[in-house]
Image 1 (tube, rainbow, N blue to C red):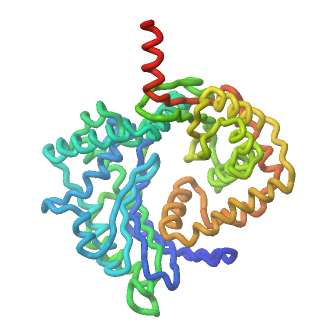
Image 2: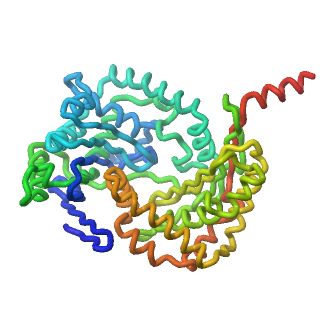
Image 3: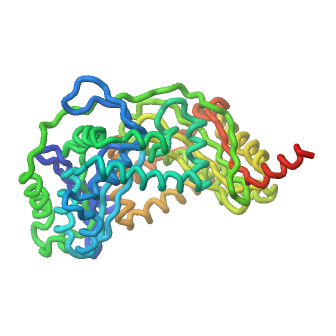
Length: 447
């Protein structure tokens, strides 16, 4: 299938192989560098499913998708996949988020060799009791590092406040207790269920003529190379994956919380829980973009409220705005460093609740709409952004390249539809306070 997007001068070539692997090629003529990712539609949100060949649900330990990603780099030969890519002159990496596990590499030469090796090592699992136990120690250290990072700790704490049972409330890496329960048997069950080609997407962003070394038929040859690689391998038949998804109401688990850490200035995050709803085609993507316009216009650096927060010393120089949706629900997060955490929380809560009645001038709406659209267009020059965004929104039944034309049609009336999300029961906050505040309090109590 070939799809052209005339308004942004992009073309996407997609082909589903016999084994179910979907191959996506996005040509970027004249680019010397290429970016390749093999993505599995499997992330930390899935912890209960029916394994391939079984008939009953299996609940696996938290963090197992991330653990599996780590273990895939170890080869039966004892070699690490990262070293093989390095010998080819390619930079490699991997990542796990809530919905996706991705293995990737980039470079200017040996792209074909890299593609073949990427497919080979991800499609050859090797787990033993010994290497699983070794990895438990490595990931435990990684988790402790994240737990000691106030930014990560703040995010996880806010998610625990917002969500009751949905796995967004848990760290992607799991917990120190959960990773101890991971076994090679669990890993193989997850691997054989989710790492089937029919649940995989190979995306290549670059100039096919430079990758192949010929002008004519470069894209067809690229598809053929991948097809040949897959034809040499044997896979189980394609089956549906049955997952148990926890759905909850729109009310937060806890309205507020705090903890002390070794920091100098308090860090605060206020979150808005987006309710569970069935998104139609492109709706999840457009909801994110609409919320970004609303947030930027209400609290962003160019807004009147941002200047007011500076004048009132409610923020220390900046504010961080984040919007996330998956195929079911999501959140809005407003985060800042502040010497006045309580006043900041009160201010942000008031501004969020004021959006129950959205009042915005046409020129203000158009200004922020153009700003976000401009940033989006600039990002289309980045190969990684194209690959990750295309897959991210594909998994949300959205097409990132259709965003421009849809975004241009947005009106203030569309924003009015967001008013239903802004209610008191959907808002929570969390604060990380400096430990010395605790010391002062303890001294006062002793006196």
